[in-house]
Image (cartoon, rainbow, N blue to C red; front, side, top):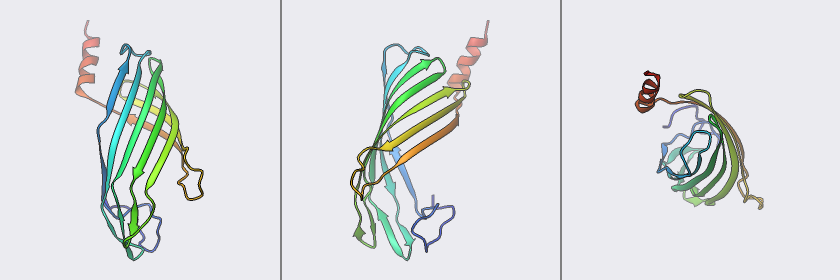
Length: 168
């Protein structure tokens, strides 16, 4: 949503002054038995990002074409509550233009890893690192990212399973 701090005299802002969002379809393949502590999965998340225009971008109009993203992970449990993954991310498209003058399309490939720990059935902590690998030319996007996430989740099915375990 176009909320947050925005200064139309600066090209770099925390807020983007436009609507944007994504639509994705997560896909998961299980390798072997689904046993906590021994699970291995291959996961894909294909996504399309859509961007609205920013009609107040340093006195101009910024438009961005849709961007296609694919995240892929090979995930392996190290213990019942501890897991790791090898991560690949590819972004393409998303060509931006300012008052009709087009910039370059994105075509970025990133590699990384994630380590996750389930603190309990509802709370998980993940730490990850990702870096672009196709960034040799001076005009290429170069990115290194370090991520720490604390996620709380709840679902009636999980709560029901917890009650079944507790019954004598």
